[in-house]
Image 1 (cartoon, rainbow, N blue to C red):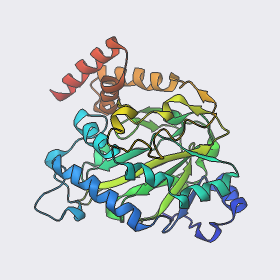
Image 2 (cartoon, rainbow, N blue to C red):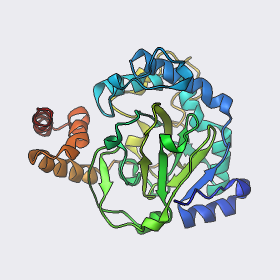
Image 3 (cartoon, one colour):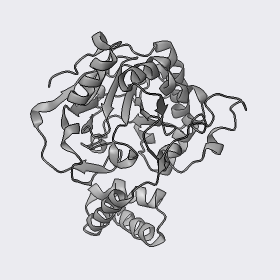
Image 4 (spheres, rainbow, N blue to C red):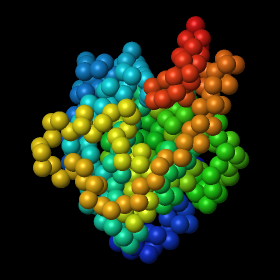
Length: 335
């Protein structure tokens, strides 16, 4: 598989960055973020994970050796409870606001940049490869404007054995692809055919950052190591473009008031987006509704690939009838 095209040589050329993003749908940079910014957050994250039983206590914590007895995935309650603890740390949120990222995107988009408040941490257990995130597009959960860009930031080196992300270069030009429910983050998998020669992938080192368009088709690579893989999904857009209301909320069923209690009152990242006079659009739930309806049908048929979506309905849905159906189907799958 070809490696990511390294864009470090055009890092200071806004027009070249824009042209390459428009053509390929992604930009990859080596050593964009300082390791001294990432490493303290990684160690804090791992300490929280170790307390939860996700990291073996008999090995050095910095090695992130997973304890598979603690295995869980989003949106299961034990998983989300630990990630909420990670989200309460200001340094975690500060990563996406680092000037090396913000200045680069401002050059590329020639506008003021909003970092979405909804920053997502991913803790990927090894060896449970059936939960590897399948091919999907970010626009469905993000919406607002198609001109939204994800920064995928590995918190440590991610060698090939630990996986990472692979992108289908140029696929952002194909519009919105059809999908079905699946295991993995987001709970969807693209069903439309893709050009299999366009997949690109590189192992990364701590500090590398991969940016891609919200319509870019991408998928996870299996973590076949013995270590937890920690990464961040951060999203960005022009302040002048519309944003979905959901992108201003924290990730999961939590409030900003639950995240901020230990922050000092005048912390610059608290509600930093509120001064912007932005166009805020309601989230269009038709795609989630389609996904959920398909998953309920699959669940009725006993298809285990419906599990991730059924868990999302149960954890985040507001329809009591659908939630009861999802609970019954999950119980049946667990028999």
